[in-house]
Image 1: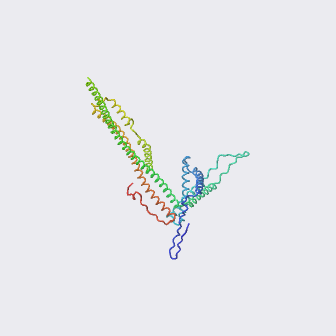
Image 2: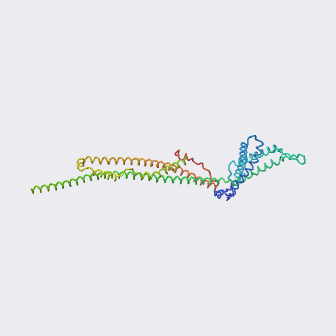
Image 3: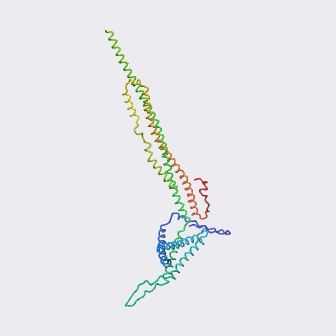
Length: 270
Length: 145
């Protein structure tokens, strides 16, 4: 990051311009995957604890209870995540308007949710009587009830820890400008691919159109040729017939001439 | 919807390409000028010359009729093939138009996204870059699709 300070005397100081981190445009590092795994495990821990609390407080069947637990966990994680994101925007030089209000609202609601769950757990400890009877030397020993404070406290610590993890990850990984650039670039790449695909189909269609026109022209030419061939064939046949007729006439004439000559010679001799 | 149109156009084009070779080489079954001419010549040879002389006009009319039948058959076949080709040409023209419209549309989308990428890069490099209210595509194109 580069910092350009404006420190001219007599001029109202403006906040230093901190340019964004262009290296972020290279994409998310591999550690993001680790963040996601940690967040998922934290959410899993929240699910278990919320299930224990809601099981005592809500009189619903198991499926409804799980839906409630999932919603509760999602809201908690989302609130802590939003708090972290907006905290980043608050401390950024060009912070977004309303980021401070959004951060505090998210944080307070998240804290209120956790406090409510903690208090409920504190006031309604899980029943210790499990129906188990231990008899030693003929004397019945009643097992001690679990500590009424330690369990809710453990829950509270876990809740805060998961919230902190979520908020810190959001704080570290919030780079809206880089993400906006990456998103725009990805969409641009997708649009360019789509354009190339459409262009390929268009060029292919234009080629096929030219081919179809060529085939059509060839067909027309073939038809003209066929008609000419038919007409020539019939003329040929007519001429051939006429020639045959002439040849036959000529042959007949010669036969007649020969026959006449023979007859005259016979008359003279007589 | 747009993707579906392009998919449909591509499919139509494939069908046309598959059908075109058949149409271009389609011949009239049972029609061959040379064979028919030889057959006709044989028929004429069998006619006695006396009869041929007497019926010269009739023979001409016979040949004309024979060739007219030829030409009618050939013309009917030619017309059926050309109608098929015209149909294919119309289909291809429709595909070309659809692709051209989609191409122009996608070019606009790409230009918009290039502007978005450029602006996002500016915002990344300089957070003081102002935002501009973009003109909507519908407004820019004045309602034209």
